[in-house]
Image (cartoon, rainbow, N blue to C red; front, side, top):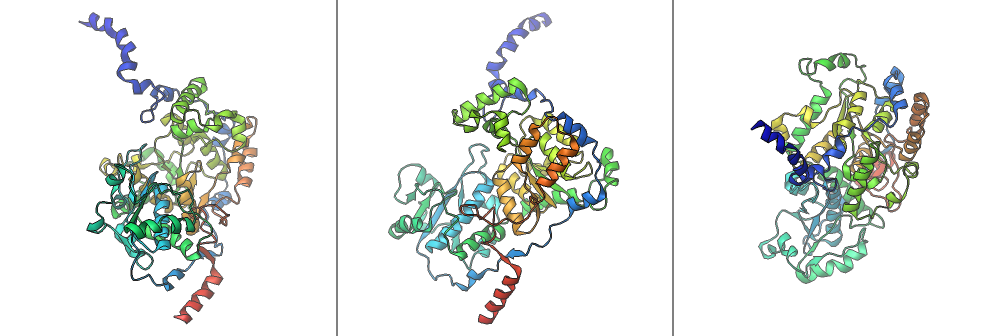
Amino acid sequence: MKNRILAFSPLFVLLLPNLFPSLFSPLSRAFPSLLSEWNAPKPMHLNLLNGALQRVISDDYRSRVWSALPDQGLKPCQDFSKSHNLPKKSSGYIQVFLDGGLNQQRMGICDAVAVAKILNVTLLIPHLEVNPVWRDSSSFTDIFDVDHFINALKDEVYIIKELPAEYAWSNREYYATGIRATRIKNAPVHASLSWYIENVLPVIESFGIAAIAPFSHRLAFDDLHPDIQRLRCKVNFEALVFVPHITALAEALINRLRNPPSAKRKGEHMSRLEGMNGMEVGKYIVLHLRFDKDMAAHSACDFGGGEAEKHALAKYRQVIWQGRVLNSQLKDDELRNRGRCPLTPEEIGLLLAALGFDNHTRLYLASHKVYGGEARISVLRNFFPLMEDKKSLLSADERALIDGRASLSAAVDYHVSMQSDIFISASPGNMHNALLGHRAYKNLKTVRPNMVLLGKLFLNQSMEWSEFQQAVADGHKNRQGQIRLRKKKQSIYTYPAPDCMCRARLQRLFGGLTSLVQ
């Protein structure tokens, strides 16, 4: 029997790719090639790594790293729109269907409230589409506290959980099965106020209701009344809060990050914890490590995995985007010089080390699967042995509440990130943009990596650690939460000033005038 089994072994090996194609194919989005990720990439910046691991950080430098942002003279504007009475009757109903991930949907919700205000119509709680990548069917009420949402905006906009019986037919299934007169599917990206008045309001006046799908990024950021702009901020920063069990789970993570576990659970790291400088005790930084296979492939950059990795990512890129990736026409050094390459775990570790974070730093990793897995993350762990994530901090029962539900997991990470002492994202994206704006609104420290500078520094293979550290420090002095005023066409959710943030002195003046008028 043993000899017979051995005789069939070669045949079994040959059949493996046919029996389990997802293990061998680099083309599957849901199941990326395991073999291409088993090859541990070599460090790309060995000279800097050696210098960084031997770094000595002074108490003065460490103190500046962890210090809170000073008062920048800008505060959230007082809500003047309450002086404008909500009309006694709305002109009809509007519903929107939002695609994308949690943070893209969050911005769509804010825009939906603004459009309802502009048109004086009643908003049905937005429908969140199932994300085709993460296959998460979480609804608005699974993620956000709907009662708080409605109550916070009750003086601004009419919002309902369900349509009246006479409009019950207007649902997702109805619009998925044919062309409907009440559906608006040609809303332009960043549409103007006049577009909604000319194209959506007539539909509502004719049928009593209009459904806009798709709706993400469908309202302009410019040429809107100040009250509408501030309403968008009020929705984003005040009305949208997560459901209690999401907040409770996030608060459990925060408590465990700020109060390190006992020596019995973390024995090998307790000596490091006991050696923490007083300024670091109870503090943590959140790193959003945005380095998944889609990003790695789409960037067309070289990540040190050799020819096998380049070939696998090129094939993946061809199948997913059919060659429509402009970056693939440029060489790696050109991409890095333009700041177009996402930071690898190795590179973000070098950045954090150069900014003054050491092996006493408690770092929370907010991320989905990292391309390359533990082989790549291990370099980051060498820098920060106290690095944690949901898996290391939550019990199996606690993780079961969000397992397989990417939006709920992202909501937990969002709350943990908002409460952190410092937040940094390895690469720009929706979560980076959302937290950049929200933390600016609250005057919280947020590091914005200088991608162009870092790209050029990492190309210099002969650079010594001291030179790299100085260049990074100089290049990030004004990228740690300093408020930047929004420019034309930029998102109000990423740059809430000056639309939603006022000079403190002027705010006190206007507040006094408002009280006198009342």
